[in-house]
Image 1 (cartoon, rainbow, N blue to C red):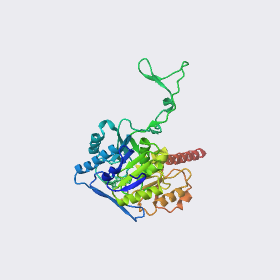
Image 2 (cartoon, protein in one colour; image 1 turned 30 degrees about the horizontal axis):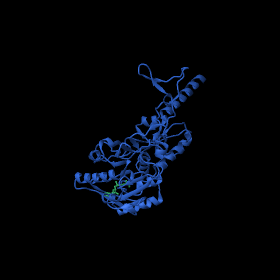
Image 3 (cartoon, protein in one colour; image 1 turned 30 degrees about the vertical axis):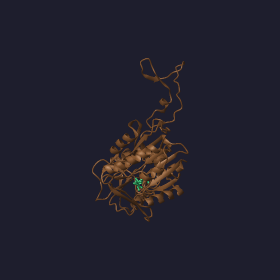
Image 4 (cartoon, helix red, strand yellow; image 1 turned 135 degrees about the vertical axis):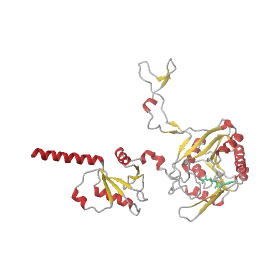
Length: 405
Ligand SMILES: C[S@@+](CC[C@H](N)C(=O)[O-])C[C@H]1O[C@@H](n2cnc3c(N)ncnc32)[C@H](O)[C@@H]1O
């Protein structure tokens, strides 16, 4: 079969054309047995993509999955691995099929891909993860350990010192003959765990093609880096928009993609020419970059029972309770803002939104005569700190006046 190509057809038939023991990694993201048709349109609404995820029974679905796993076992090298992407709909059934065909001993990990979701139309817990089963063909599988940064709560200073067991079997710092602690080997970080927090493609992401259930390239690059080296062969028998092949090409691996949909094949081929991969700010900078509220601002918002809003210069929060059926935006006056500037920013961010009430929390004293000239429907609340300061000033003035009398 052609290497570095996308093949059009049913993978159950097309896999017959691949030689035994020839593939290093097989990732597959088949339909999940949702029993519906998945449809989505691209960014400029010029093309609608769809694929069917309807089967007559779970047995029919599992029999299709089983045939692909059997073929995978045949074509994988002894050092190769399978990563099977599914979700709660059928993961429990699929795991048993994987055990049966590849052997329970070759189960390596159940990877949880987790991402943030914002709304939940249904009663119940918000679903925010999918599952990727990682099985090797033999115990002699290729595996490259990836490392992540230590968490904020890790005491790195302690980790960098060597430890040993004392006479009571307790782990203690190792000391040299002068009583100084012994420094340990260079550390590369924490080995990657089986819970991967990778953002779902946002609607504006450059790499979004409009193909339903398209996976982010970073999810695939992580997986390919774990199980292969440069020049290895990666196969995706349900390649859809070609995400796996794009990630493989980017990492200088060889690839084969297969899909039953002609539209998917055409799209995947186009993506492999364009090679558009979005940078994830969330992944690059870490989630903490997005939290820019000071403790004082968070306390002000908490006092009036409001949710904080990050990265918006005109709105710092919203009241948890709506007013007149509409959300209530809150702005906190910043150290370098006049009251007028703060009001203007709140008004600009609220423009065209039909908010009935808008609140500005004033944090600094202001020139009263200027305030009279402001024409605004923004409600101004003085922060408790400002009210206390104003009260103290008033009392001081009264005391001074009494002394003068
Ligand atoms: C969940 S989507 C894959 C999405 C892909 N991972 C991506 O990032 O775009 C599943 C794909 O499997 C394809 N498919 C379903 N049955 C197939 C079969 N028997 N052989 C090959 N492809 C099939 C569908 O056309 C669909 O594109």
